[in-house]
Image (tube, rainbow, N blue to C red):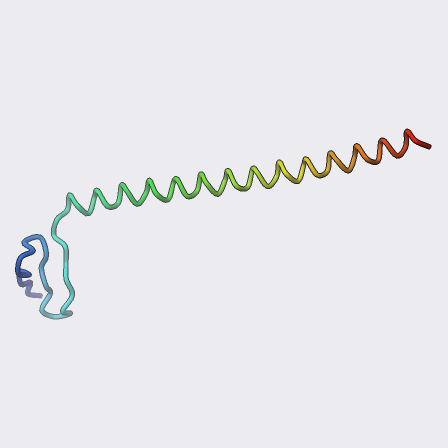
Length: 76
């Protein structure tokens, strides 16, 4: 498997067998992985917050319904 340098991009190499481009900059790759993990964590946290808000809204609706039933019993 032979690798050739890509012009004007010293961190990139082209695999002559598959014609694919390989990034040999390990530091940039590791930084990408860290940023990607942070983004996924934020998305997960956002999903959890949205789920909690939905649950709170459902509980509020149920409480309103219970209050109306109690008021109805008091009026009889």
